[in-house]
View 1 (spheres, rainbow, N blue to C red):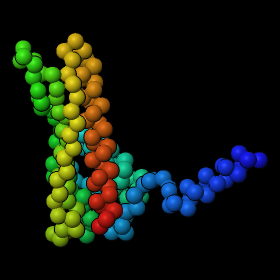
View 2: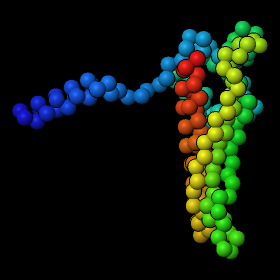
View 3: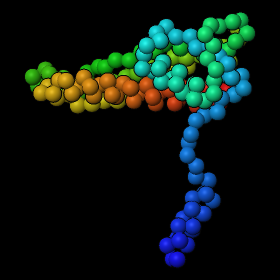
View 4: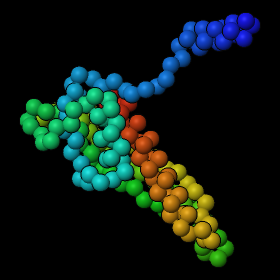
Length: 159
């Protein structure tokens, strides 16, 4: 009986504090239908972003017409750069970066001016595990793409 009351009290405390799961961002009515324009449709970010848009209820149009809302991905770039090297001039730490520039327009009117968002993550390079390092870089790049997509979705929801 005592455990039941503790469970009920814990549930009441969680609901009264306003706790709820984040879920999917709600898009404004202006973005109910949109065309996604991108220079490369096969990047990590593009795949995740399309999934996030459709999960939020945005119907993606197959082609743009003059009255449709266009989400334009102007830049979708990722890569890595060396952060530090050893005394033998061997890289010991890399930084993976992902940069996205986007804007939202309808016709010639900008609903959202161009914005650039960049995320970085560094990792330690072990020359004895080359295959694992390539896999780690790919996993980090995909995680950065997911985080960037979530950031862009929040900015679109604020329109």
